[in-house]
Length: 152
Ligand code: FAD
Ligand code: NAD
Image (tube, rainbow, N blue to C red):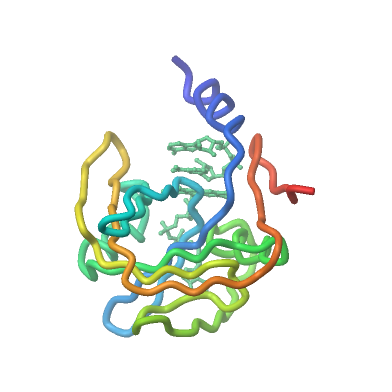
């Protein structure tokens, strides 16, 4: 099966968009990800799928902590920045939640500790236990068929 056919098919599953952030030796790194899901209530677990070649993968492996920032429709630029879709580099300020870096203006921020790690083909699945969370009102940024959308 061709990669493009698979991606086109998976792209028909409409998702929100998150930025995953993690910190190593004082340096904060962010990465856009839509492979995110809620997993368990007891304990409170979520999952993110990170490409093995992504810089983020080695950072979470070492830090064993990460934040998930669920983006609002006003944060399309953040998604593009942290997916490497902008030409110029930008200085982004992070706030803190439970000591972890989080993006201001996100709909939801989660501070997670790695609970389990599973190798899955060319990705690593990180199950995170949610230690702290913050929620605010707003409309989500969505991703469908390779394009950013609003949901209304
Ligand atoms: P890089 O490519 O080095 O970094 C990503 C970008 O973020 C760079 O432009 C970098 O300059 C910038 N950046 C990082 N930290 C900072 C900072 N502190 N301040 C300012 N800029 C910073 N990939 C997956 O593995 N899983 C997914 O679920 C996933 N979902 C995606 C969903 C969407 C909608 C899109 C557009 C992409 C998705 N990707 C996903 C692809 C992934 O976002 C890119 O491949 C990304 O470039 C990989 O990041 P990296 O960790 O290798 O680091
Ligand atoms: P696209 O058409 O590549 O993505 C559509 C869908 O295909 C995504 O929502 C995802 O479900 C799936 N997909 C894409 N690349 C994948 C990968 N490497 N591994 C597993 N599933 C993947 O959309 P686009 O706008 O061309 O994406 C921009 C870039 O971001 C591309 O380089 C793409 O590979 C990457 N991306 C990666 C993932 C991921 O690793 N899970 C998810 C979305 C986008």
